[in-house]
Image (cartoon, rainbow, N blue to C red; front, side, top):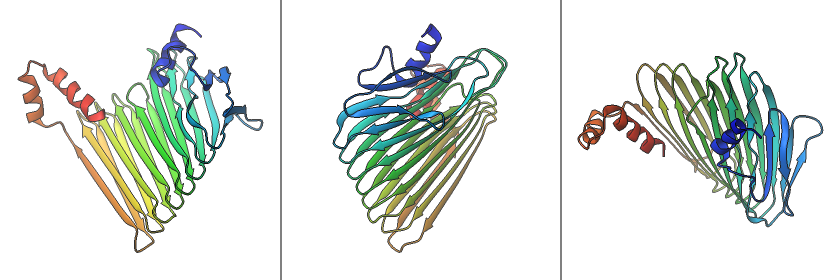
Length: 305
């Protein structure tokens, strides 16, 4: 890999070298490296672009890295990745996509990740999106994540997009059975003329299952963000959705929650807050010696932490 590709890997997957354990690295539409282990098998799909990641039941304290990088201007792709996590697993999955575009053509990555999580399994899923380059071509990412949790399964999903993506349509869907839990934490920052759309839809189908969706975002310049969430309580369950946004300059932020209770014991809550940085926060930091720009950056970093 060249210097640009290595930097992209560092940005989206915190990789400075070949990772230990299972991994699949995709660069400009081609496999750039792969390793399976005794408990985690990675297989190329035969009918379309993408891979199957199969994790044996009982696998614990193991991880798999599956980053994607695009360094050729104008490269566009659609990838399908399916994860099969066996019963009683406890694993971490590191994904993410980085784009370096120094040309005039649009670079685009679209990916559909589908998780099938068996009984009592625990998964931590981390996904980072990053763009860079001094060309006029756009960087576009449209990730779709579908989660199917069986009895007492747990999935924690952390997604981050804070630089360099001109347009994104982020979709997350989930279905939960009895006792299953889904935790989603999203962080987004847009600037310039960028656009970010986030859509969550969760079906709480099993007794005592729960979903907690938290989105924090910052919109700067003339960028636009839209947040949509739909939680459907179809059993005795608990659902919570929270959208907090800082709006700056001439940007625009929309939050549209929807809760549907189809069971008398479904407990569903939504919270949303959109506002500018408080003046007293800036003044307090500036009295400590920071410039206004430095104070703003400190507040934003703390908010998105």
